[in-house]
Amino acid sequence: MSRFGGPEVLEYTEVDEPIPATSEVRVRLFAAGINPNEAYIRTGTYSFYTPELPYTPGFDGAGVVDAVGEGVKHLKIGDRVFVAALLAKRNTGTYAQKVVCDANAVHRLPESISYQQGASLGIPALTAYRALFHRAKIKPGETVLIHGASGGVGLLVVQMAKGIGATVIGTASIEEGKSLVKASGATHVLEHITEGSIDKIISLTNGKGPEVIIEFLANMNLETDLKMIAPYGRIVVVGNRGSLEINPRLAMMKEADILGMALWNASPDEYNASLHAVEAFLESGMLHPEVGDELTLEEAEKAHAQILNKKARGKMILSID
Ligand SMILES: NC(=O)c1ccc[n+]([C@@H]2O[C@H](COP(=O)([O-])OP(=O)(O)OC[C@H]3O[C@@H](n4cnc5c(N)ncnc54)[C@H](OP(=O)(O)O)[C@@H]3O)[C@@H](O)[C@H]2O)c1
Image 1 (tube, helix red, strand yellow):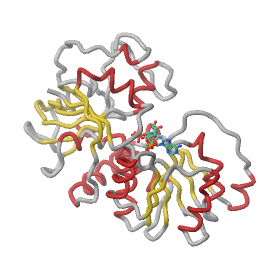
Image 2: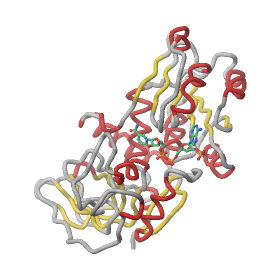
Image 3: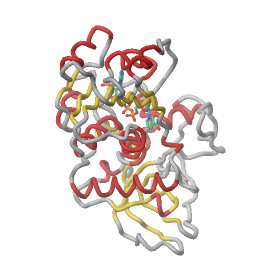
């Protein structure tokens, strides 16, 4: 990108090969994740981050380590890895054949996980972890409604919640998305909840409502969430694209908590701990990222044109030649 704007500002071009400094590595990438926040950043109006131009987008990817800076102990040339560089001090961008970033943003990828799946981790997996464990503090045995379970983040929330012994209800629009939510471990899969379908959730939870709601479109759903959350429940706002009017009495009556969540706010300790947890979940088989639409690096513009509008069926990625 040499300017901010619509998807057309993404140009496929040649740049110099980046060189890793002390505590950095270079990864030869075979896939990169496409995240909604990269589309927000592209406009130059995103509240968390405005890059200097020219800028190569991308925080997530997977590939093989091909150069190692001084002082890097946990990685060597040839290791299969995934990159999760949102909070890295240096990140040259994963929409590229090669990326240089802090070595501690790069972790090993088990043989059983493909590069495409590895590129689906990064922001989605760390967001799922933070929403469930750092913010909702979910406990085994609780019921969690994942309101928007079919996307890059939602499916990993389903898998993590199921893996620690929560009962999962997930929502999605299209049949393909619903099947993935079910296959990821949801006990019940429904359309996104509206005023007219609150009773359905209440009856599925024996009249109580879910203890936790992970919310991906709060501007549509927050008032509905407050109507169906269990007493003393927690609603974590992960996604929001506008504003709405709510009656705060709903929160008061149930002593419900509305918890904001932004991965950008994770401390270095929290971020690193989440990465280690994700690595362990992958090894154990608890996490198995579902890759949806796969475009090529040259098609980044098309990917950005679709990411904010297309119905989700897993994680959108770019494959890299
Ligand atoms: N707070 C953070 O740190 C953080 C981090 C990562 C992502 N996010 C945000 O979280 C959201 C999801 O990210 P993603 O990467 O998973 O995107 P994605 O793959 O495009 O998925 C979007 C999800 O939203 C669902 N959705 C659509 N309409 C909905 C509705 N009325 N109610 C509930 N859910 C609805 C979609 O379901 P269908 O397509 O099946 O309708 C899909 O599951 C985005 O807004 C993103 O910006 C926030």
